[in-house]
Amino acid sequence: MKIHVAPSSEYEREGDDLIKNFDVSLHDALFGGKIAIDTLEKEIKLKIPENTKNGQRFRVKGMGIKNRKSGERGDLYLQANVVLPKVSDLDDDLVEMMKKKLPKE
Image 1 (cartoon, rainbow, N blue to C red):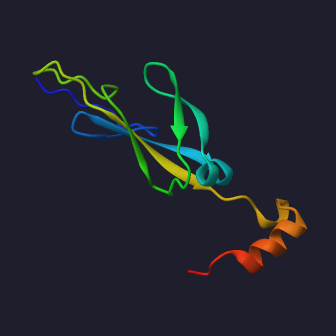
Image 2 (image 1 turned 90 degrees about the horizontal axis):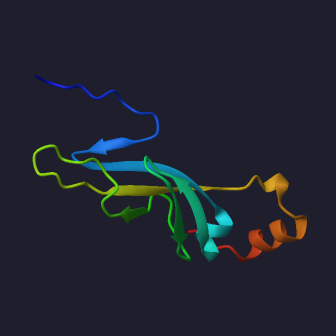
């Protein structure tokens, strides 16, 4: 007997591991912070380190899919999606300073 698992809009599956994208503000990506994330089982607090890159993954051990043969659980990988603010929402002085000081590469 074969069981087919319906696809999820929230999770991607790689074997027994799950991948979930989550949004992180530019502020938290640059300076670090803590974010609450809902998982299949419970809400967790994820510590975001300084200089987090877009697409960076964080491993949460043992929160993936339980393997029916081995009984072992896979891992959950949380993948950062850094959300940039709209320039129009930023303070004018900050925008001017960023234009002058941010590297172009």
